[in-house]
Amino acid sequence: MRIKLSQIRLEPEFRLREKDLGLELSINKQGLRVPLIVEEESKGCYVLVDGYRRFFCPSIFRKAKS
Image 1 (spheres, helix red, strand yellow):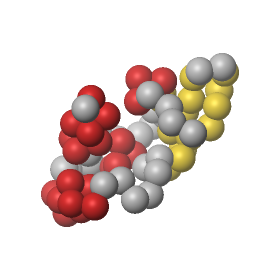
Image 2 (cartoon, one colour):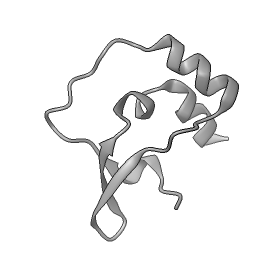
Image 3 (cartoon, helix red, strand yellow):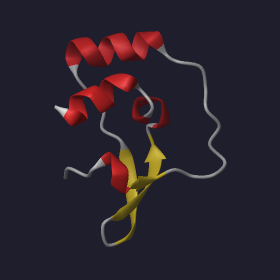
Image 4 (tube, helix red, strand yellow):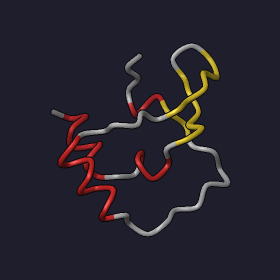
């Protein structure tokens, strides 16, 4: 299922980590191989369960916009 990134809410206890250049290079080269894992909170609203580093990878946003 495809979900817009704007429909995903982050858990408040998540702390931002440093940029993962290896992950970004991998996504740029191969695409997003492992999807983000979300749980539906309500219709059209989801909470991110797994994939925080992937969610914050700038490559995902560039690909999502195109």
